[in-house]
Image (cartoon, rainbow, N blue to C red):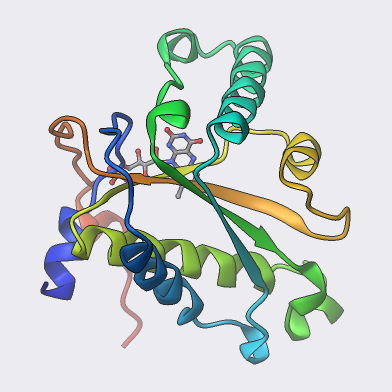
Length: 190
Ligand SMILES: Cc1cc2nc3c(=O)[nH]c(=O)nc-3n(C[C@H](O)[C@H](O)[C@H](O)COP(=O)(O)O)c2cc1C
């Protein structure tokens, strides 16, 4: 698949069919994650591929708890209608765990350890694009408490659960999404 087609065609999916993801495809998708750039090539990620029904149920319960908290905290009414069932129906969830010890020179700078998060974000996008190129749909999901997610996934305190990627075949057409006029967000210095 043409790269630009994948970049523009990928959409966030919130409705998955139950078809499992074969090991072979999963391997290719995870490998794409490992080819992301990272500070000092430190590769500050761990990917946990979750297909366990029980663990997906726990993730759903935590996200549901977090959603209720967010409704109270933000007052955003749309969160009341936001259904999280995709966390149970997606055949696979890939958890992306970051290691703050594997950041770059930024660990000595004012803003602190950010590089490991940037690298993990690049890995997440690689995973999204590779999955799309293989005919899968994905969702980048972050509505969870890191502490609780550590407990669910058995992640040590010093590592950071940064993202959950729901992965599977789309269960329905995804609604179109637009982008702002790109001229508003681009500036040239010549
Ligand atoms: C850092 C990050 C966090 C996100 N967290 C969530 C989330 O918790 N739940 C969700 O449904 N979508 C989440 N998204 C997906 C965005 O809502 C989605 O990318 C955006 O609406 C644009 O739609 P598109 O991905 O189809 O282009 C997240 C995206 C990013 C980059």
